[in-house]
Length: 335
Image (cartoon, rainbow, N blue to C red; front, side, top):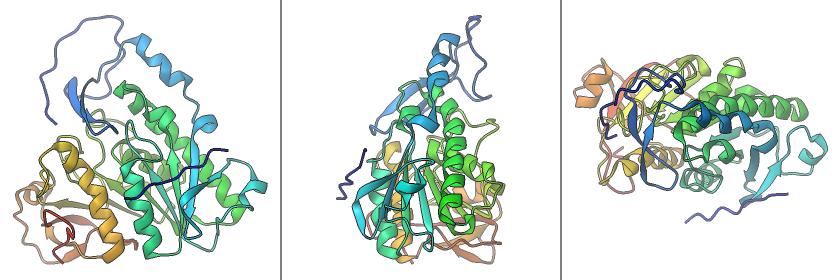
């Protein structure tokens, strides 16, 4: 059985008209060619219109068979225990404990179980609280360099993850009210799909700089109703990350586009999970309420009320758009 050792330690170009009859319908109404960050940390120029022959890899992706689920707890904080779908007997031999809250982490494009997203967040959650942390490895669906195929695979994987959660809860007696799902990039939209397929009963979902390319008009993009409480952290809005609000609460730190201390869009995009990790450990990141996301991006927010970004506790019942400033280097929070 596969186990994992965690070592902790958009520019846009204009679309080109094309009348190729072999083209599949485009992913959404956005610009055809866009830059997207991969798990390799590099920007890739992707074509959001696909040839029919290019769709076949998505047909072959079977997430129920190839997705893997890795459990980390305080008893095994760095070496995972695989959780095997529909294997109740194996589950009882692991450190999974239904009396604890469960964190479900979903990585983005070209990432794997050992992605920085996971190596940053797994220890943060375990330091804060005695939890079950389950890392979803959907790299068979996300690992294709053909970005539109990864977009197609995103909701397909999300539906499989929802089936996994349904089995896990039935086998262990766990409840959706004790779940917190966190996704980054494509994984952020997938987190929403998981919550939606589970009837919106998950207590808390956090979308970290949800992917922009291919999701402007996508039916399965992240929605506020995907969980009891949904929160979005925008750190490269309108470029690698989604521009407009998506959740019950949307935070636009530093205006949501350019993060202090970063000199690349990749860094901006990844800051979302570094901010999340720090918020889990220490709290902080107090945001000021804004009238619109445009005012948040401009840093012109003067409404009454503040709210802390991230953290382990859902702010159930809260809604709105918030702005805050961060430091260029850790600790990122200014309070």
